[in-house]
Image 1: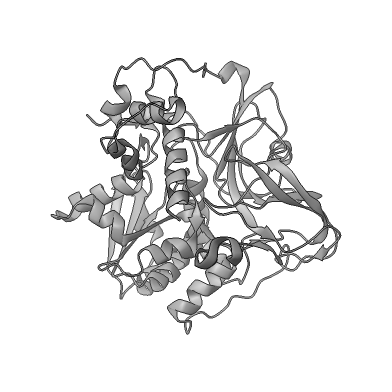
Image 2: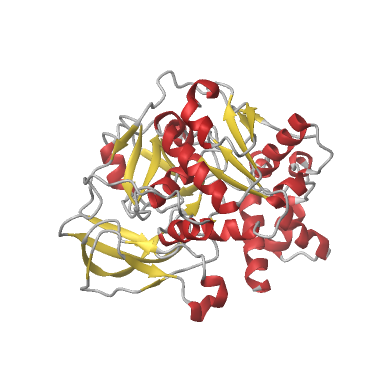
Length: 446
């Protein structure tokens, strides 16, 4: 049996546009902005930096050839390096971060940017431009990797396709959904650029039922894509999961009436989202590095909600202040969605490139998350779409139970949808433990 969650939004007044966030006096830039890589600072305390200057990158001595393609980290503001300190990351981990004090003049912010003519760029030039800008792919809210690294994964595949999701993976968020309404032209240009980079033979656009894509997709955009076949997938964005790789691949197969397996589609396709396409546009057309991100901020603690455009490194505290401050006592902070997000406990946590939403909820809205022992009820197995046994994997990691190696290898099939955790009566963090085991296996293989 496959389980899906119907998420009924109670919001009568959805956010319609992007609001520019306050300019922080200091920013704290985590040195890890994607999975499995920690960059090294190339600046030191006391250095003066310009806006957009590269301040950290992956070390070839540490990662070897794998360092190529890892997203560089840029200074989002001009100023002075105060030092390198420890801080809490939005993914719940701890690590080093560069702190910058604002001073000097801006290179991009508040200035009119000329648009580059990229029509003569080769795919390699386009990819280098996006990579140098430090763009990462935020398609998944549970795993994050550099744009270039994801492109390279399908480089040698046949029948490559580009999947773009124009709505949010987690229905409790409105980041990609709002961006699709407000920055549709940018997103379409980003899709065109990405299709050239990946050299795909088809573009697949997944859009929510509530939108009228045909009206938004005007004549000029149709002319831009005239040489590339396009397929439109209408999805119920209020159903979870509906926007993962597996779900989109199955929808595509059903619509096309193909005999292929969804594993074949997933392996040969590049999956991305509206947020990433906006960053691709900024990198290629405006020649801007990734130094600001769009974050959907809401929760019953706040006076107002918004889709804020903020500098990377802005603290959660400053973001809450931008939304009018707290009207209730803060209970918990959830990053990247209520269904499969991560709870953090510090308002000093800075946003990173992979933060798409922050939810501030009160104690009254907090439900009991206390963990108890596994009941052996089997619910986690019954809802798992890929046939895993999350309870057995959890026992192996947490208690050291002896299990067949096949269970350990099966973690590579996990889609990180989080349904096992959501349906566990003991509230065990099954999905998180599976992700940790998969990361450990990845590191050991390298």
